[in-house]
Amino acid sequence: MTATDVAARPTGTPAGRPARTRGRGPGLVQKLLPLLPAVVLLLLFFAGPVIWSIYTAFTNEALSGVGAGATRFIGLGNFRRMFSDPAFVSSVVRTVVFVIGSAVIGQNCLGLLIALLLRGRSRAVQSTVALVVVGAWVMPEIVAAFCWYAYLNRSGSLNSWLGHVGFHQDWLYTAPMFGVILANVWRGTAFSMMVYSAALSDISPDVEEAASIDGASGFKRLWLVTLPMIRRAIVTNLMLITLQTLAVFTTIYVLTGGGPGTKSQTTPIYMYEQAFKFYNLGYGTAMALILLVVGALFSLVYLRFLNVDEK
Amino acid sequence: MSTLAPARSAPPRAPRSLSVTSPRRSPARFFALLALAVVVIAFVAPMLWLIMGSLHRDAGLSVPFGAGWTLDNYSKVMNATTLWTPLRNSLILAGCSAILTVIASSLAAYPLSRYQMRFRRMFLYTIVFSTGLPLTAVMVPVYVMFAHFNITDSIWATVLFMSATSLPFGIWMMKNFMDGVPVTLEEAAWCDGAGWFQSLRRIVMPLMAPGVAVVTIFTFVVQWGDFFIPFILLLSPGKQPASVGIYTFFSQYGAVAYGQLAAFSVLYTIPIILLYGVLGKFLGGAFSFAGGLKG
Image (cartoon, rainbow over the protein chains, first blue to last red):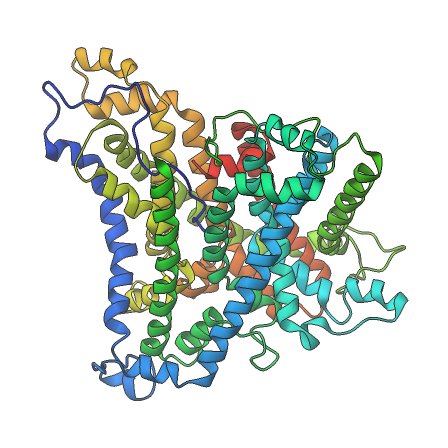
C-alpha cells in the first residue's frame, strides 16, 4: 500500500472558526517555525532524491563498467537507449496490461460489485465479507505474495483442488501475467470496496425509490441513477488505484521475479534489475524518472479533479 | 455531499429497502448472497495455506489433510537469527519512523490548521500531490544519493527516509484531525500568555488523541509491512527487518521448509492484524477505513 490514499478537500478551514489573523498574531517566522522539521526532512529525503534523479538520469553513472570510474553527462543518451530498448518498451506494455487488468478492471469492478451486493445485507454478512476482503488488504505485501506463490504453484492448493477436474497446470509458468494480476486484484480490491461503500451510503434511498416507482429495472437504476451519482468516487478511486498499481514491485518480484524469462517483467521490475543487478544506475534512474513523471501526471489529474469539484 | 466522508462521520448505513438486489425479491437476494459467498471463498482460499501450513508437519505448497498437526514450525523459527533480530529491527524502523512522523507532522499541521498564510493552500496541494508519487521509482535515486553520502546500511538514515515518505500523508491526516479541535478552547490559553507550543502540547494534542493514535498506528503498520525500502537501503542481515528477513528465508530455505515459512509469516503478520483492530476501534469499524484514509 502506498500513501496515496488521500482524497477530497485538500484545503479549507472548517466553517465558523475564526482565523487567527487579526490583532497581535505571531510573526511570519514564528508561524513557519513549526513547519521546519517536516520541511527539512521532506527536502532532504524526498525532494532531494527526486531532483537528484533528474541529474543522474542524464549521466552514465554505474557501479561497474564504463560509467563506474568517471561519471559523465550524456544528455538524452539514457532516454534514447530506453526507447530503442525492446525490453523496456515491452515492460511498459506489460505495466499497462497490469494496471488495466488488475486495477481498472479487476479491483475497480470487483470492489464496486461487492459494495453493491453488500447494500441492504445484514450486519453479519457485511462484517464477514469485510473481514475477509479487508484482511487480504492489511496483510503485509510480502506475506500476501507468499500466499499466492503457494496458491498458484504447480504443487499448490489451487492445483490440488483443480486436479480433481483435470485442469491443473503451473500457473506462474504458463500464465504469469494472469497470476500476478489475480494476486494484485485479491490484495487491492478492499480499497475500492471501501471507497464505493462510503460513496453508496451517501446516496439517499429516495432517489432510487423514485426511479423504481418510475419503473426502472435494477440494472437501469444502477446504470442511469446510481453510477452517475457516484461518478466522483469512481474517478477518484481510478486515479488512486492506478497510482498504487503502477508502483507494485514486491508482489511481482516474489511471485515470478519478472519471469519466466521476461514474461511478467513490468517497468518497476526492469528498473530494479537494471539499477541493482546490472548496476546501470543512470539508466535505472532514467526509467525511475519516467515512472515519476507518469505518476505525477495521474496525481495532477487527481488534484485538478478535486479542485474543480470543490466548489 | 462528499463521497469521501471524513473519519469522524458515522459508519455508512446501507439503505434497507432498495438496492440493485432488493432484499424483498427473494431470488435476487439469493443470488446476491450466493455471489458474496463465492467472494468470501475466493478471498479465503489463498490464506488457507498460511494458517494450515504453519501448523502442519508435512506442509509443502499445499497442505495435506489428516494427521501431522504440530506447533514445531513455530518453535523452529523462534530463534534469534531467524525471528527475533529481524522483528526487533522492524520494531526499531517502524517505531522510530512512526514517532518521528507524528512529531514532525503534528508540528507542521499546527500552522496549516491555525493560521491564514499565503502559501498554505499551495503547501497543502504539494503535500497531497506528493502522496501520489510512486515510491518504487524514488528508490533508485534514493539509493544513488545514499551511496554518494555513504549512508547505505544505516538504520538511522533509513528511519529518516521512511519518516519522510510517511510525512505527506501524516501531515494531511493530522491537519484534518486538528481542524476538528475548536480554536475557542485555545483562546483562553492565549489570553493567559501561552505560546503556540504550549497550546499545541497542552490543549490541542490531548483533544485529538484519537487522531494522533491513528497517524501513529497507520505509519507504523505501513513501515512494518514495507519490503522495498529496507531491501534496497539495508544490506547487512543483522540490520534488516522481518520483511527482508522473511524474503531471505524464503529464497534460502523456502523450498524445504514451507511450514516454517508460513509460521514466520503468521508471526510477522499478527502485530499488524492487532493494530488494525485497534485502528478500527478508533475509526468505527472496517467500513470507515476508507473514510479515515480519505481524511
